[in-house]
Length: 299
Image 1: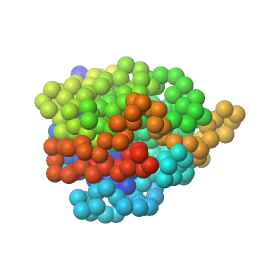
Image 2 (image 1 turned 180 degrees about the vertical axis):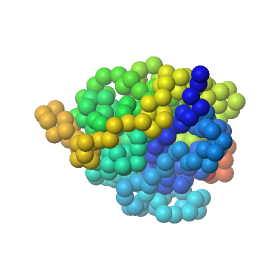
Image 3 (image 1 turned 90 degrees about the vertical axis):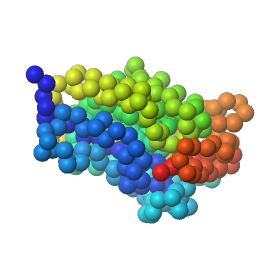
């Protein structure tokens, strides 16, 4: 008999210079029953999605000013040429500690910069670098995600196919379309759901909604309890679950860019495009030295 107590607890990471509340609003356009399967009636008011804010306050103008109220946050920073980023190690440690104290989580969901971080955590966990005491994650929802491009990161995080079940939402007008497709190749048997929009959390049509619903249902069937019911062993210590191993071959994280120009076509048109129109009122896109950042959002 199917376990009616199964719950999905999902950690959701927002995009650059936005907030957890903004991502929650973006996700609210999806059918709310998608991530609330098999609940007892008395549990229906239990919030099983967690939307933390980035570790750092926005260090500059947010693209959603005038669209959604502040405060705004970022997970880490990068230079004007988008060739270096800082505070990434601190961000990873913070997220691991957050997961340890607030989990266990069944899965991860991220938009743009948040999706890149989710995939990085999953890759590091698969290689035994972080979250060693946390139960295996069962699912990952990537929306406009991308790989980190620093070779020292790639050699560890994407060394082997990540076996976590993943679904990747990729927009035909998204300036991160090609990097998003590249991220999907890092996972074993990824589900790709394409949409006609740009760099945004898309509205899902009936077909996409049913694809996602079936994908989640299949994961629940395969899970057969365990973390779905919140069962896990307590970690030995926060330090053990949050540290990134410093053994030889472990990446140095504070060095290079997330997305190089060579991650798109030779013309760079995907990053240079500034006229993408969405079905909703306003999408604002920034350019940094000819490249757009992880910032375009919509309500």
